[in-house]
Image (cartoon, rainbow, N blue to C red):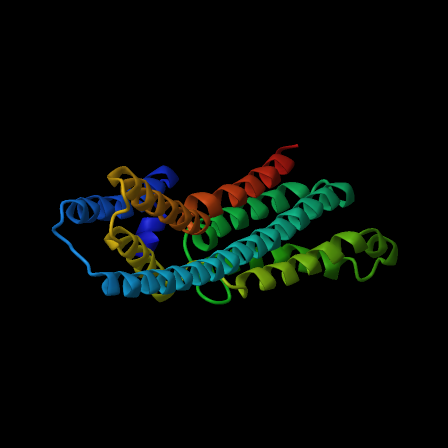
Length: 261
């Protein structure tokens, strides 16, 4: 269910996150102002304490989620950036070393990138990477294994290909790092607790007795509801498919352009 929600368009995610707390506030505040919900002074003191506790718990958990999701997403994007940058270097070095080999490498790199996009970016892969993508990567490596064996008898050619072979070894390490890293997605239980605390914060604020003017009560309650909705939408936006895939797609396009040059 969480994955389906994160796949929605960003604007729709924001609208749902903001509309939900506001929809809770309106009937509760209306009931408080009409006198349907009455509280004694001693009840008010206890409610203020409860509001402070819930608000603090919500703030701490929200900060924890934002920092962890943001850092995980940034780390994943940086790792993928290093991988695609190395692929670019491999393409350039292959063209410089053996132009005849370049078309085959281009074909294998495109197949690998397509599998990365389909099986390891657009969906959560298993630990260690998707088997289909791994096969595409092995086919790419096999070409360089054959090349390295052919160069064993020619020290001069092997020296010329040294940079290319070093980049190939580097891409192996980078792929291993990426597929063994945390995905950066939201944890279902943690997200549920955070949403519950957010709604309880909005509800506790709405139940506080009205001040001297009704409009102040509306401003206070709607303001808290909007603030809660906005920060919750920020969390979901950071973890959404639109946010994560955009930066990754830009990296793929950059490599594909390099292939076309």
